[in-house]
Length: 314
Image (cartoon, rainbow, N blue to C red; front, side, top):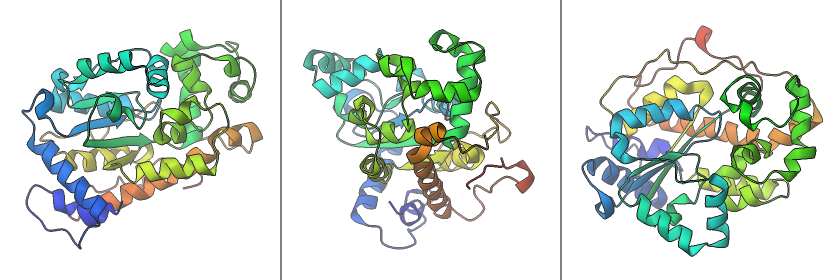
């Protein structure tokens, strides 16, 4: 999606688009306008609903805090049950489970949990607005390793408590990970996790390794997203998102995520886990650039060079 063509078109001050937008972009513009106009809607009256694909260790908790500030608890769908159960309901079409989900989710207009692309069909939404935050995949794995070793994720850890990062990576390609059955544990076992989640629920369930076809699937879906940000450019991402959604509050420009140094490694096991995610992350970076180019000049200035994270491969 050429965001530079339509980001101006949704700016609340009536600024014209720089050039005619393609049909898909026009539909996105209309949905975003309707979403912003329906702030007081409820239930079925909310014809456009927002779906935030919150990927593990990709800054989603920070983004959700702003969603809660903007829309309140009434417009943030809470956890809808075990992620594995939901995924399986979608794939095998468990009609009873899907009916219950639709009844439960009907009053909400913002869905911000660990969902994957395709969730809108489960809750019977014909006009979804999707968004996500991506992260350099090795940095994401390092953050996940810290979460499982030292943070609240200890209860999900199924590898030795003194494991190094390299041992953690190797564990993910063999042993217990191949036997996982669902939930957070299964999700941390997945290779190229970000690519699978953006491709959709079938890609999460698929036991085969992601391929070029999986990446193309994720890239196609990413083009349908009205917004893609990156953790490495959090300040710019929050600023652009706030402008698109017409949020009327300021952001903490100094808000930082838990640090995670970028591992300089050519380990084959690590490359196996992140190959397609790295390509998707670069694609997300370009999407963010397009969005920023569509906003008024200087609206979301990047941080000073000395404040930017140093990441290899950028």
